[in-house]
Image (cartoon, rainbow, N blue to C red; front, side):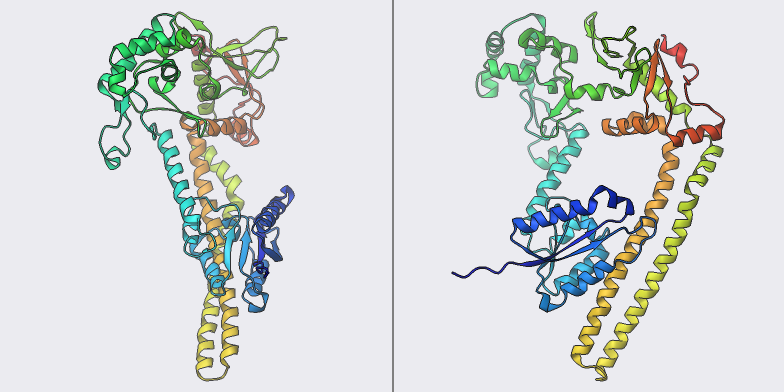
Length: 513
């Protein structure tokens, strides 16, 4: 019995910042590539490690040069290059593909071991080159659909089969694209009646099923309701407008017309299912300052509280630390208003902003000048190589060189040009990144309070932790800072304003309303 010869591959791993050497980034990449090789029965013949390239100054990549030379020698019989992710090879599609196409001429493909299902520009380009990844196209299409669905869901569009009592407004997918489901006439009104009936008294699911069947539910829906279907409808927050996607464990307010209101929905849940509202995932969305606000008495992080009173829930941040002698409490509306006032107070004046950005980014501006010089140097080097290639062709035509000599020299020049183009691309990206960060920082500092209001939960939490690393203290319905991140301390020093232990003016009186 003949044994199939194992495909020979090399591994290329790279970090673009010396700090990444300390967090096992190279080892993480290597482990993933080795596992991939083992799973596919590949023989790893060489490993190329590109270590410690400065994030500020893009330098040459000698290991990539060696890799291209090694892989283009037929005697080495290399079939593929394994990388952890495409960005470890290049951060630019056009320039990165130059090196990939050079490998492809020798039957060597590039395989990203952890990105076969990701949707990104390089992924789309790789479909035409990486024939070894036959399933990549289908995976990318599925990922694109999932990404689009999640984006639309966050915008308030229900992407799946309409809930009972709703329908799509039009017949075709094209007509319905970007539109929420609409109430399904009589069937929708029966569901509305179900919530009203369930909210009025404690009753059984069987009784409610009989009730809506008596209104014609079975004929309109196609089958009669039972207790399980009633429970499914009643506990679904979609009907008061708050959609939940189990796949992503996310909530979003829908753009569809609700069939009931939140209070009626909650009463129905208590009367029929015997459960009060569980905030679970919603909880953090409603209370973004959980864990940031601290009780002044015990310095324990405050959590959520939603006591019932006069027919509705009142939402608070509250200290639940049992040993605490004075459990602080503050309403979420007041807390959020004071918090945005604090962010507004911290906005630097135009003079301070210019001074701050000059101090912080003066070195970066020098970096931009350096990257311009480095990019120009790469341009000159590429032009020299292009001229050499032209001269080589002329020498070959005049039979100064043999065909083999000309071919070998041309391949070396093309390898060097491919590397230089990748380096030129990364230098430009670094320059653009630096300029973008400078512009973003200025806009960010000026609109801090407005940005917080429009951020999603993870972004809010990240901002809160960055600005107030030790939290905010709550005392008698007021919020005071403990300390700030060094960036904002510096802005305060420039502004002659002490942000620490400051409650914004007018906030104290407003918080007592």
